[in-house]
Each structure stands twice: as structure tokens, then as C-alpha cells.
Image (cartoon, rainbow, N blue to C red):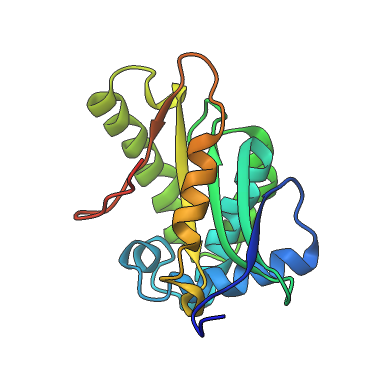
Amino acid sequence: MAASEVFYTIRNLEVMDDEESNQAEEFLAAAFENDEFTHVATGGDRALYGPFWRSLMVAGLRGGEVYVAEHATEKVIIAAANLDDTLCLLWGSSDQREEAWPICADRFQPEITKWWETDLLPKYASFCEEVFGEGVKLASWHLQAFAVEPKFQRKGIARALIEKMKRKDKPQGMYRRSTTHPGGDSGL
């Protein structure tokens, strides 16, 4: 076995217990440590990086699908992807607002929560309607979160997760959409 080879399994995570939740929060914080969006989205509070991304995973469990790559011998989550097909916007369903949004919003400084709720999310929704067309975003699959623990990056795990999601059957009339930063290419 080559030194860089990693054995893992990919599965659809239907529920997330406390241990998996803590693992996810830890590796998500590490995976997004240098991410500019995460920095801005959390008001620059690095202690909120993990809870912020974990809230997206919980939102995915309440209104989409979450796929994880799990290390074969250590049985820890080393990668995750949240594919949202709920016909709603980020934290848009009542379940997501009640169970997922507070994971990070309750820890944000009040001005950051206000920015999300009264500025970013409404403007993002309007922008998507303008760019994609009326109703298209709501009728699309969304890759809301995607991360691989840094020490396992560049080993094909991200590609395997993407391939697993690409093989997923999508309902009639659904589109795949991903929002990437400048220069980003999701390959979907």
C-alpha cells in the first residue's frame, strides 16, 4: 500500500449522533480554516467556523442529503458534502430554522446574525432569481457544503464524493447548481 493511500467508505448520512457531530465540527473547522467566505460569514470568529459548517450539515439532514466519507479503520468522518434538494433557500424550512440555524446564529455577534437574516440571505435569494431565472434555484440541487479534512486532501476522496452524488437520481425537472467562488469549478 502506498503511503498516501487511504481506505474509506462513502455513505449517505441519515442522522448524525453527537460523536459524528463533534467529529464533523472539528474537521470542518480545519477544512475551512483559510476560507474567506467562512471568515466573513462568522464575523471572523474562528471558534465559529466548525459550528457554522455543522449547521449546514444539520440543515442538509433536515432538507436534503448529506454524504460522508468515513475512514475505514479509524471510523471517523473525513469528508462531507451537503446536497440540498428541499425546494427552499438556505435554512429556509421551519425544521432547518429551528434545528440548524441556531447552531451558529445563537453564537454569532448580534450584528452578524442581523446581517445574515436581513441582508445576505434576502439579497442572495433575489440575486439567484435574477441570474438563474424565476424559480430555477428552488427547483435545483444545491451543493451547500463540501469539505475534506486537510490531512486527507488530494487523495481522490472529494472526487469520489462528487461521483457518488452525480450518480444520484434526481427528480424530473430538477437541475444541479453549485455556487463557487471566483476561479472555482465544481465540475458538476
